[in-house]
Image (cartoon, rainbow, N blue to C red; front, side, top):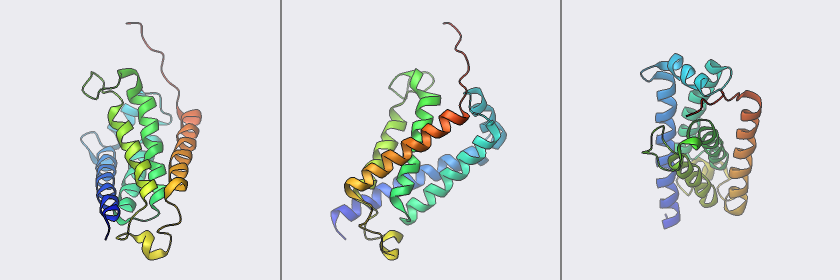
Amino acid sequence: MTETDLAALLLRGTLGTVMVAHGWNHLFGAGGVAGTARWFGSMGLRPPRVQALASGITEIGVGVCLLLGLLTTFQCAAVVGVMLVAGVTAHRRNGFFIFRPGQGWEYVAVLALAAATLAVLGAGDLAADRVIGIGDDLDGGLGLGLSIGLGSVGAGGLLLTCWRPLPQSPG
């Protein structure tokens, strides 16, 4: 195993765990799906229950696939897309820093860029991608382009079709 393989394994493990935890929280956290739906609805995501379920299921599925190293570049695209949607709908108005009221966008930016970086590196030797024979086919510049391109198209499509931002009160 090379240093690059180790770096990919660490990134996959970190991103996969974070995504599973976020998805689990959306589905089974304190407010469950109903609480997540209320929160998503308050940000203008429609229909909120569908968005809550889709978010939780997607994040858990992507996280598990990242942990396995399965179709890694496409999972990275999903992380980029999810983080773009979160950045636009929940964090962009709050400034950069996560510790600001309402939480800024630094955290979602770091996760999206970590996913794009993983897409460049590839899944590494200890991954299902290597077992199924696509270990080196979708990394490098192609991985970067696919992760950012597909993630952006997916996020843009969701925002265009399902996001109806609520008017901001003056203040």
